[in-house]
Image (cartoon, rainbow, N blue to C red; front, side):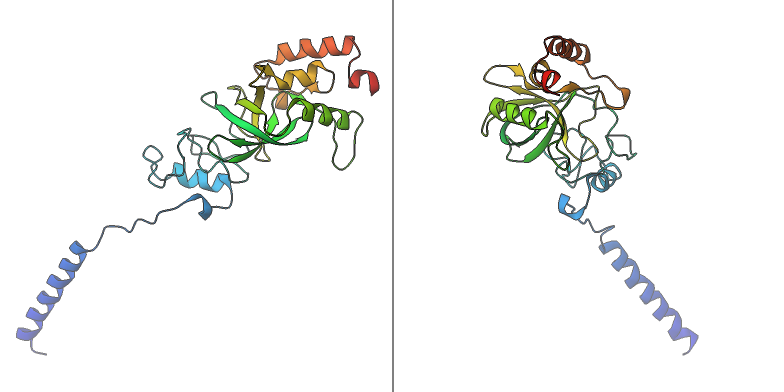
Length: 231
């Protein structure tokens, strides 16, 4: 091809390429939702790396607590640090959620339905009861029966987190105080005061009501109530 013809052709090709580049979008936005991730940690990492302030993918939901896709199983990610772990180290605020009991799992664990319809498993903060699954331990069935009497299916409760503890444990269960709305009583402490549960401090990090719970435990032990008498 002669030079006089080649140069105009090259100029025309460059002009067309420039117009196409200007008309093409700078990027293609691919919307993500929680079903795109297998764990809460994966969703949290993506959330923190993609403009969490505006949350363009709406992974944080309506509570705006900085935790993405809370319904997904653990491993779970931290909040706001860009780092991940098995549980978040310290919530920034106390969560208060209205719920109804759907099942008592054992003496320190319940299933609930939140006001928004989401179903969660709640591990009661600050207490531990003997096992009823696998190896049945002394006092386990009694603690479960007592909790079923206190919290029958449909009972309205207030769930409250503790600012000194994680929002969820390594199994993805929400860590909460369970307060019976009809009486205003702390059900976690009730289990301790009746001698059916013992005070449980995770990883040597006392929860807010540790002293109060230990006083209740001492009273139950001195009176030989519940498992202090039978086990």
